[in-house]
Image 1 (spheres, rainbow, N blue to C red):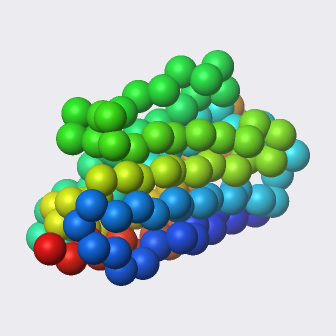
Image 2: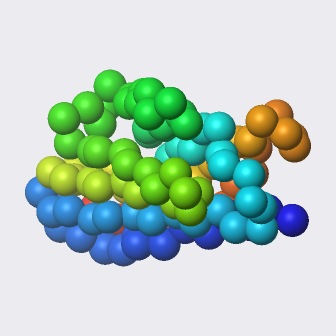
Length: 118
C-alpha cells in the first residue's frame, strides 16, 4: 500500500520562505509524476507544480519565479521550495504521486498547512 506523507508547512510572514517535503513509500516502483497541489478555504484544489520522471516540470503561473519543485528519483521524494510567499499562498498543500501502474488518479497525502500572514 502506497503512503504519501507531506511535511514542512507552517506559519510565515509575507516575503518569507518555506520548504515542503513529500515522501511516497510502500513501493519499489519509481513514480511517473509527482506534484504539489493546494487548496484554499472555499476554493477548489489547484495545481502548484509537478515534475515527471523525465524531469519535465510544470508550474502554475501564480508561482513562477517564486517556487521551485525538485525530486529525488531514487526515493520517490518531492520538495517544494517556496520563496517570496504571499498571503494568497495560504492553504493546505497536498502531494500527489502517480505511477505507471495503479490508480490513474494516483495517491494523495493528507496535506500540510501553509499560512502566510500579511
